[in-house]
Image 1: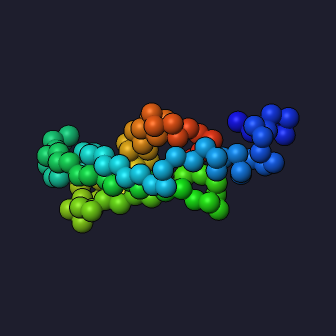
Image 2: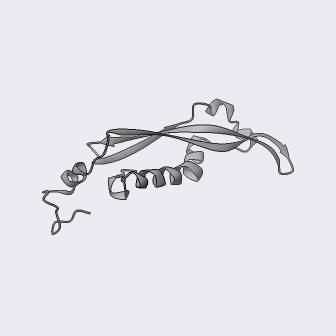
Image 3: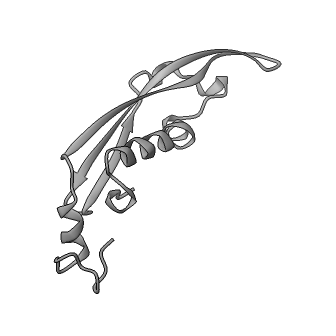
Length: 113
């Protein structure tokens, strides 16, 4: 972590963070479960879909930003009790992404999300 008294040889925090940058971008694929068919009375058919998460370096933010997409989102019906892509990301995928980023050395100080 950069502070004025412990500046690691850099004039400001943004320059310090830029020096820690790894690759320009990463792509991760995460499978998650959704309700394919809700038969009622807690009886469900479950299927899986894949979320594609892109993590890209932003010079403006001096950190990595994340975006996500679910190519098969059209198959996931909210009327069956499913969330939208943001809900799946927040409830399931986000924490797996954070763990994977930590594992490759992209810690909290390098994430702009």
